[in-house]
Length: 431
Ligand SMILES: Cc1cc2nc3c(=O)[nH]c(=O)nc-3n(C[C@H](O)[C@H](O)[C@H](O)COP(=O)(O)O)c2cc1C
Image (cartoon, rainbow, N blue to C red):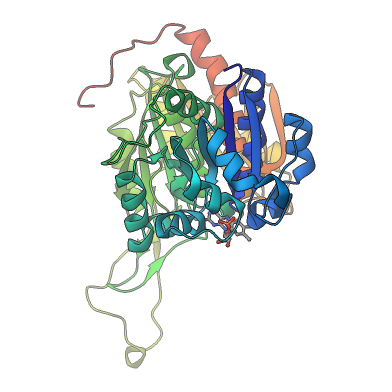
């Protein structure tokens, strides 16, 4: 990379916080890196960060250092112009040939290969305008790297996440090998290939339950709960990132399925029980769903009407999925290597959690204190205690549900490795 000149445009997307890592890696590899910040980009990361990393001035406008004709100089000397992250707005400007700031002017003036990492919410990425802009850019030879699927701003999950800095740097390095003249007619998008060493759970089968079951009262009403499915989805996503084959048995959640995860949609506790028990021989079962303990004894076939008077609901107990899994395994009937339950508690969470862990014959129990600020239903964050059957505990202070998921899987990993240190690398049947 020595003596290679790379211009990195940083635009106003949340993923701009990862742009300094891209710059740092390129500088460390010996490249001369010039950072061009859009006005949006400068709202997320300060010029001083990039100036400290590169030892070079950061510019934003064509009006900065006019005597140096910055846009022409940058465009002419660049071996690659890379944009990380690329917002929908900057992609639109580039596709339209606008030149309203230093980055778009440089993009218009350069003949060097151009690499962009689109990053935005799924709705923006899937909008016909953005799709058309992406197609125009590809047609002109711009390599679009990603976007990846995964966690987005505000707790959303889906397509639109910026590829990670290392994958982008690899794409920039690949572009350095291209001819200087931008090839017209389309460059294939660069795929992000997962490193097998980062897939320690390849060959493992994981079942995660998420969401809240719904127990019908009549054709339009149900008994439900406030679970959104976020915690279970974060666990399923984390397991898939580790390379596992993941089935997500989910009820009552509108949230999208993370990449690499198979979704099994259910409604009631009985349906969830059936689907989970059918998959009980997995390496890991995590029961993160909020499952109704009771259901109406009778489901009215027609909508209950006010005119018919106030109905009386009589309830019957639902099957206990965690207890059935634990019992079956204890009786030698097969079951997961690691069985994890969740408990949402409002009083004396740890004592109640220990009691539940023992009763259900699980290996781990994740206890949510519903009275803690920012924890439990509907939040992007959670604060939990992971209790283990061997008496140990792991406290996870308030953090994102993604981080909680990873910490939980680290605890699971220790038990998996002890039980079966070398999982088969063959994919599960049918995958
Ligand atoms: C907190 C925050 C996060 C944003 N994240 C994104 C994003 O990830 N992708 C995107 O296309 N726009 C995002 N936007 C909107 C852009 O900042 C906005 O469209 C801006 O005009 C982009 O300008 P630029 O492309 O010139 O930097 C975000 C805005 C805010 C306030």
